[in-house]
Image: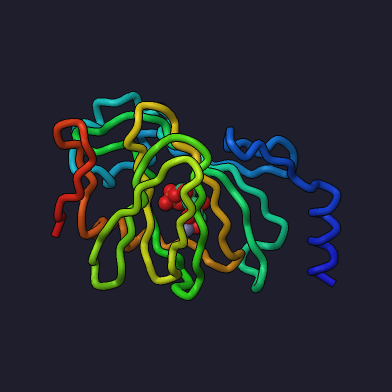
Length: 194
Ligand code: S6P
Ligand code: ZN
């Protein structure tokens, strides 16, 4: 009966989107906000992060859960909005994670802004895909993923991921990605971190 109940909940609260603005207009929207203080240990220049206002909003994620987290076969839908800015020579970026379940893939689609999707496989090989309005990105289940806003305006991208993907932030906190995206002469350059 669980599936029917969650279906009923969703149809009553069905969402409506502004695709290009990256906004969920209606619906039972959940949100998490990452401030500067939440990103300790992520940037190479930790001192630069410490000099920032700890309450500064770096990015926010809004999403809808039409099925129970952890349940098999469902999907979540959300949007991430990353503010423009830099910490040292690195761009404002998401924490980055592997999915706890490494078989669970994900789609990202850019609504507005420009950035880089940083991907890493289990051997720590790291590469990027440029993000711009309309770009669609398939993230394989076994790849760690992070997004950096390389522009001077907010970057918004839609995401669709399985209800039982989960998050593994630990691996990234411990060792980071195999390379860092750094600003060199005003351009993003991927520089080895290992
Ligand atoms: C979830 C999906 C996104 C991220 C969001 C923030 O699988 O990849 O919704 O959660 O972009 O990134 P992070 O690394 O802080 O969770
Ligand atoms: Zn993910």
